[in-house]
Image (cartoon, rainbow, N blue to C red):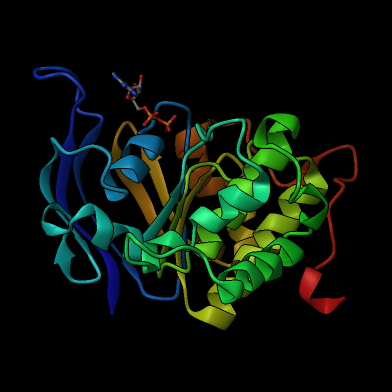
Length: 262
Ligand code: ADP
């Protein structure tokens, strides 16, 4: 079953401007992790924003869980998908707890307020992301990286089937990058959620054992399983001839062992 189905998707910011997405065709099956890889300016954020319903003047079709994106109301979208942009624009004065509780509102009627169950769900998610110590702080009082983790945690609290993350590790130190990626991997496996995310690190796609879409100038140059796509030969077409395997380096790369094995 397809969670995302994109047909002939074309987008340009200005009429008669350059095509930022050029007749894209691809699908993401339910319960899969999908990573967009490509140089700066290749169209990753634009594609993510289009799928999240934030850019409307596109040509072609985007189907989310079998329904045309154009026909989904904002409320229906909030139930089906959660989106985290590169920079959170949430108000600094909100406490982390209140911000995370907003994630539960998509399942309520407008006269309802969060219940004990909702608070427990927030606590569970905060625990999983190891941010319990931030819950009483205001968003304006935490670091950029902590704020990014809080935003991703908020998307998980929303309990949507599709989770869309624009560069979810961009502000994170290597330990937190690994921790967020391992949580994504676990949630996809255990809860059957579908993820689509962009990353600047091809190794993230390998770690996530994901599907990969390699973008160049608004087109998909290659797509498939990370183990088939993330190799020096394929990546050269985007990153150039200098890209190499770490075994060819003069130093040992630092990494983390698998979270699940601990
Ligand atoms: P990526 O996320 O891969 O870095 P983007 O989707 O942000 O790429 O950008 C793709 C292209 O669209 C780039 O050439 C960029 O300059 C252009 N672009 C992005 N946002 C806008 C905008 N709001 N208005 C005009 N052009 C934009």
